[in-house]
Length: 195
Image (cartoon, rainbow, N blue to C red; front, side, top):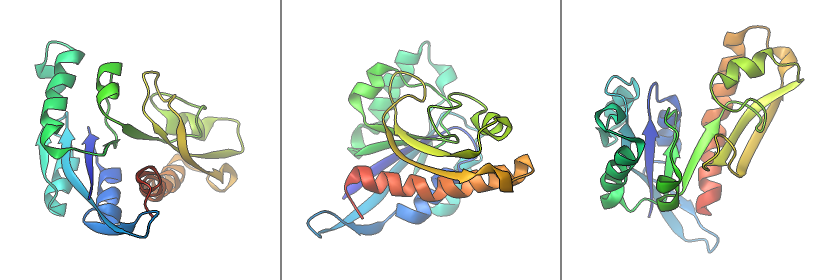
């Protein structure tokens, strides 16, 4: 079995897509063995996150660990790692987790993140909006390993599309989110060595 833990802060649409595409499903490894993928735990740092409702509706286990109750980033990350211990997770998946993880956490766990731009373009906040307004002909989505530098880890997968077909920010967002929901699943399976 491959165990995933998903961290999120808000809406949780990528979390829902990952659950629908991966949770309690079987895939094959390089030796043609059937391997089950399970989302063992979902953790939010925001008690008001809509993603908590998604977890409940999907029957996913979840907990809230709010960062603002800790004196420092390190204290929060120590508590987060302690919370992860029982799950022996193979990957930590960031799905709209609006916290920057330190090297301390990243040395303990392999983490993936999804970003709504073709990295290295538009790192950081509001990337989707900045990509929409940018002069490039193409936009897209990147899935990458999390590193100590913001949105700078090794890229696992990218998918691009022509921007010319999208005249409004809303239609652009819809396209980006549709790609995210598909590509994140592909990237997780790639990293796990499954198909």
